[in-house]
Length: 277
Image (tube, rainbow, N blue to C red; front, top):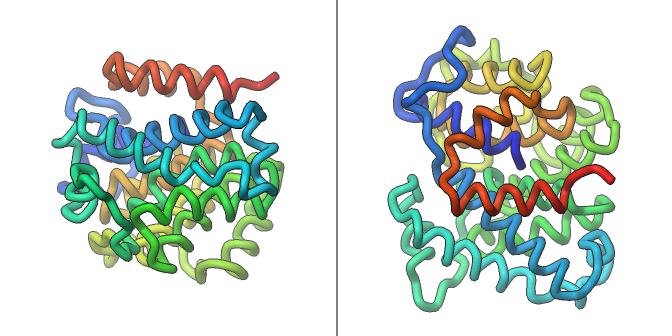
């Protein structure tokens, strides 16, 4: 999830002012946390609450749908509660309405918000079937269109594969077989790629930015250089890059300075649960 947060923060200043090169200052005073980070933290809170609620590590829930049947309601609860604290963080129109609705229902979305917030599921699943089940439960509370569910699952699956030692060739092969054609590089599309808020036109580009990058920081720079919906595309790419490369400590230390006390506490809870050993 930290990788998604870094991508969001670094990409925030380029969302409406794309910069199609890699030679930019990484963190500046113009950077900020947006809905990508805030909703990722909300999903993490819901997943951790679900795990604690059944008295099991979350991995014990993945093959037993009855054990986490309340996960979707927890996701809704946390996204609404946390989202209402930050009404001006960059929500899309439909999602912004959903956050404040008294009786929230999914609205058949295939927007890229499905993939920007899914990274905690990719980290906490203990099997490929668990990835699919967890990502669907998290995603369908809003983005219940098949393309929305596919975009979230592709991102979570890439994270799962990366953190379990699969190399880039294997990840590319799996993404191509099950999710999206990746027959391009960021260099191929940099001059023509345009702003797009759908999973179909953001997730493949984000996965490709990860595949094209040489290390964690380079993935972020490659993703920014693609243009488009920079904070979200880079959050998705960064979430996969974290699982593959890890996040340098110096970058983590800078990134968390952008979190207010409420968000920092949520990140610290995640970090404590997710820490090795």
